[in-house]
Length: 357
Picture (cartoon, rainbow, N blue to C red):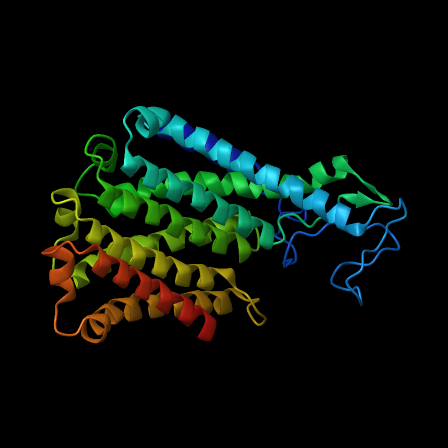
C-alpha cells in the first residue's frame, strides 16, 4: 500500500508537470494521425502514393523501405522497453515478488494476471501511436536522423508512461470496487485463484481500452484524464449492474468456489463494455467539435452497452443453449464452455455495435 501511495504521488507530479506538453507541443493533442509514419527524404514517394510496388530510392541511394524498416524496428524496440518497464513497475508497486510467484511457486493465476497486464500495456501503446502521439519525421534530407527521432518520440513516451500509470491506478480501483468482498492479492498469491485472476486480467484490458480511447479522443492532457476517470467509473458501475443481472452471487462463486466459468463470463462482459466505452471516447469522425457533441457521443455508447449487454445474456440463454439453463451450466456444473460462450458472444456483440452504430 505504501508503494502504491508513493507511486501515485510521483505519477501525479509527473502528469501535472507535463500538462502543457501535448502532442503538438502546445498542450493539445493536435490533429489525429492514422499511424506513425516516417518523413521520407525529399524527392521520394511514400509507399501508398507509389503507382507501382517497386522500391523508390532516396538521395543516398537507399530504398525507402530501409527507412520504413528502421523506423518500424525502433518502435518495436521501444514497445519492448515499455513492456519491460511496465513489468518492473508492476513488481515495484505490488506487495509480492513477481518472479517468485511465476517461477518458484508456478502460480498460474499470477501468469494470467501478468499476461492481461502486459497485453493492456500494448493496447495503451497502440492507442498512443494511432492517435498521432508521434508524428514521425526521423528522416532529414537523405539520412535517418536519430536525434530528431528521439525528439519526436517524447510525446509518445509521455503519453504512454501516463497511460501505464493510469493502468496501475485502474487496477487498484478495480480491486477495491469490482471485487470488493475479498482481497484479490491474497486470492491470486496464496490461493492461486485463476477465476479471480481472469477478472483482474480482464479489468486491466478493459481499462487499457478506456485509456486508449481517452488519449485518442482527447483535446489535451486534462480532457484525457477526465475521459479516463469517467470511463473507469462507468466500468465499475457496469460491473455492479452485471452482478445484479446474474441469478447467482458472483463474488461468492469467485472467492469460495474458484469458479473459472464465472470468471470467464464476468471478464468477457467487462471487456465487451470496455470496447463500447473506448468507441464512445475515441470521437472518431467529424461533427464532434463541441463539448455537448462529445458528451452525447460518449453517452450514446455508454447507455447502449449498459442496456444491451445484460439483455443479450438473457437472449443467449434462450437461443444458444436451448433446453438448459446458462446459470446452471456456469454455477452448478462450473462449465467452462458456457462461460467462454457468454464471454465470446458479449465481445462479438460489442464489436458489431461499434461497427454498425
